[in-house]
Length: 635
Image (cartoon, rainbow, N blue to C red):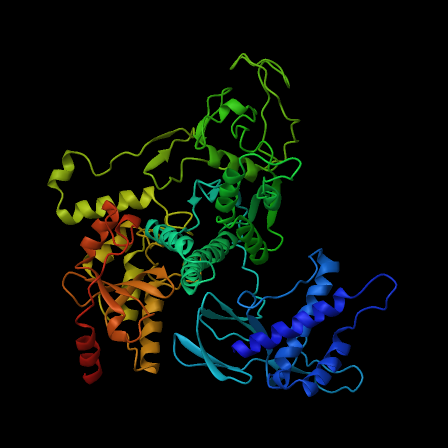
């Protein structure tokens, strides 16, 4: 496949050189059809080029033609040279022929001959629930890891090699996400400290490198700086840094994809601040005649801004919710009071605190800006009692520049006080933060059993924190739904787990992504716990090498196919961690906590292995896995 990359890069650079010779007055450079004819002649004369696949090389010509057309149609830059070790990749067109159909389902016919038009399709075969394979010309069948439930149906796919890892991407245009059918409006304020603050109180943060990973980056950078110039050691150290940075980029893309899906499925209208990110991240170095100041500080700010994924989140939300995403002018959204509409820079006390000097309204500064964005054009103003624009207000006694006020558009301000942030603070209807009451405190708790105290503490934290993608805490299930779930599973849930679903909520709380719902799917791509268990059991029957143990119910997912599961057959309801990236199933199961109660306490106390300060904690393998699957097979 590296040879395919070299051939595609060579053909691309030849076309760049051809178009570089064009000057005003000369004839135009050859188009795609003429270049394909020239490629045939070049393959006849060049043995190295002839050894490669003709379709891969023709697709490189087609990629260049598309890039050239995009320059004039969409304003992209001129196609440039591709370098070895930087631009490693190629595109493949499918080899299967399938009849094409029109939008109404009727056969697509050739207008001249009247014959059925046959299209291309990629040959993909599913091996098991985790792996599939695709046919690459000249390489045969190549396995790849499945990241979606179904097999891709595409005409072409692209293979790339980045940071010592091969990636495959199928050219599939997904269908837009279905709207929730409500008139809910949400405003999103994007920042550095908080990646996305929503007008309903949610605060979403893009995942970054952990403390240990940042330390590893600095260690490898120091080693690379001390290594001789051009040495293999310097190259290897920089390659290690690149792999860690690639992991951060993959996390950022995954977060943007999942967050944009949740936004599209939860809200009817989504409003972003209109940010010119390219201008905001422009270098401050200046010119030779006028050198810039604080260049290194500005470069650090640019890196932090680009690490938040602002543009990707906005673009993917627009792709999934076409016609339901709007841009709001950014000026004054962070200085305008969302309660009275007064604009004053002194109202922004700090990065996180906003207190209006006119009406005294106070809340988180990012949330205030998000509410203004949700209202459109910086919020809804209210008439002042004494002063006009630019006058002296009774609240401050100082001059205040006032922006021209927009016309009221009839969009109500979103109500406050229903959501809380992850720091254990709640907002009153007036918006002023106050300490969350300790619902577990009181004399009656002394008479409560340990079981009841744990359920009370879980309910309190469930109301105070929101996993990403869960705008509100779902309602608990009733006894009928619990009975249906247990009938579908074929066994009873542990008492503590059943009480969580009956008394706290139907999922939507807990560590990281939170508990899965019991029967109804959440507003994301993850199925409910019962559906996931049944799918895993069925997949285990199809793939005997990876059987799923009976009675092990997945209750929460960690991403990348990893699940937290409860062993419903054990007395303490042992919590297990399933990690599907292991080489064999015996090394894919770990003991997360001795019991479900211990697992919940570690989440409440912040002592779980998934916390940043506990990174690197080694979990013990689940010793009973082989016995469980063997006993189930023999029985």
